[in-house]
Image 1 (cartoon, helix red, strand yellow):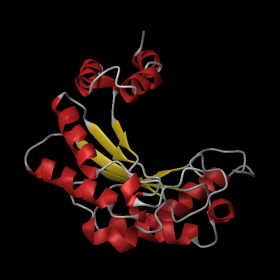
Image 2 (cartoon, one colour; image 1 turned 60 degrees about the vertical axis):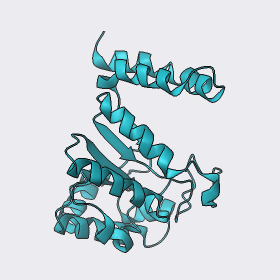
Image 3 (cartoon, one colour; image 1 turned 90 degrees about the horizontal axis):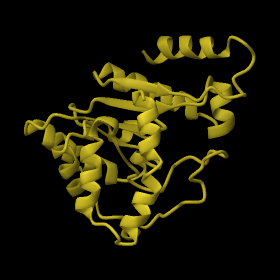
Length: 213
């Protein structure tokens, strides 16, 4: 069995594992044992909030909107969990939103991860964003972050049809700002049916290289 097949097999246990934990049938130590055993297969993803500055029609989290911070899991619960997960070998922690820069919670996590790395902890961490709000918080993004992943749906006309007018220009401008400051910038895009006609993908890539570096 190769690594992908093994990961798929192990992932099939995660919903049952999460439900058992919520029902208090297993404890936190049991979760740590599970992830310790399979640490070579896992990164940690953190949904830091449930709000977004965009209203993309296809968003699978569109109905999941909690605007009050008091309804969220405390940041300390995340940092404590990450601290313990890192001790068992997890090597990547990713903040994925909904939109991390829509409030201050993700920034608090980034500062915590920065402190861990500056204290000698060896791991990677990054963040996924739509890119629109990056410039508001760029001075608070730690230099130790390993990547910032900006999601786009394609060239400007395709992206903005789904995400709103001006989103592509703002996100790609911020990608350039990040790149110019020395951050490693990734662009994530789903290859969807709207990427027509032929040549759209290559045009998209060339525009990104030319405009955002």
